Length: 95
Image (tube, rainbow, N blue to C red; front, top):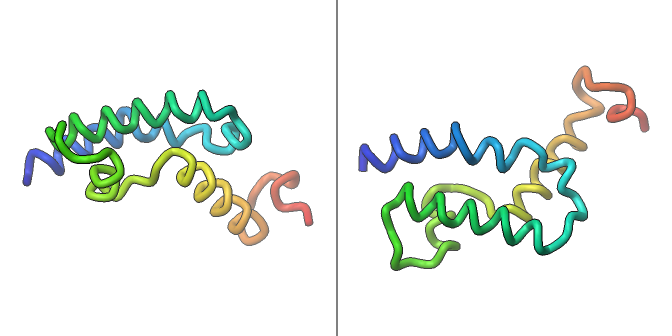
């Protein structure tokens, strides 16, 4: 189990952060682009858990990773929720 947590930490720091980085800009992107990102994420989950047998959905759940579409929605909603409360650029905090 220790190697899985180490693998997960490395994967999250090197790849998952890049998948999450531009979530705001991916709103409304094509399904084709989402599918490409999901394939990368699913492959990463299989490598981290060293599991080719289970479904990608169960692997993502085990790693506590959101699927790409849900991650985009979550990060965007979190940004919108926090923007009035924190020192954000005026275009984000303007009501």
